[in-house]
Length: 305
Image (cartoon, rainbow, N blue to C red):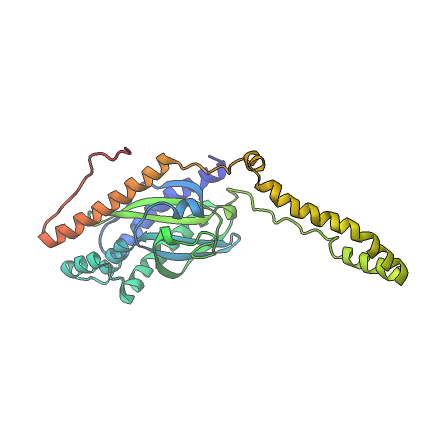
């Protein structure tokens, strides 16, 4: 871990307490955030991890540091937080959560909480970071992380990011994780990629040929065409002969088979385990709601046979 990342980690730990106080004060209920977990990763690495439907609030960095980031929470948690702010009755809130109805009213109310979180981050950075900037929450959208186009600039550019994750709980109810993505290059955690320069001496080649042909007389150009004829016939004969030689058994044997990219079985198993855990959690919630109780399903073991 670099000193720059260590400094960011300490700022996130300090920000956690401020977030708890300010969000709890607005909601009128105790909101807690666990000790943050942090790491630096690519857009592809983040969005390839199994996750359900999520609410992504875009965050713009403005000031001495600029860039694009985001805050991501599970859609059910965004509904619970937003519903608590507008004081939905518990029975109605549970119904909306189970059906994942992220209405415009809930979007606005959760957006207020996202604003508070950005404000807490800005205040903490003001006190503990040398450069002056602020985090501004802009629009939000509902996404499926595994279906994000990695090469596009949406919902965030294809860059390297600093990730902060913290588990949430509201009034004793455990929820998923709030995840904050900040551009790593803006904080000096990685070097800014350099764009290769294009060669400059390509445009002059066609001009040389045309100048040379103009300098020749008609007789010289005709002689050159006549002399070039046998050479072209030889090349044509070789071109006809080459596919036949390449199609022969000896040529086929000489070609090495293309190497296939190996699959990381351990990583794939980890992803599948997480997907199954998410599925079982959702099954437990929906069956429990139907039965009027609580159902928890825990897999004993997953193995590859």
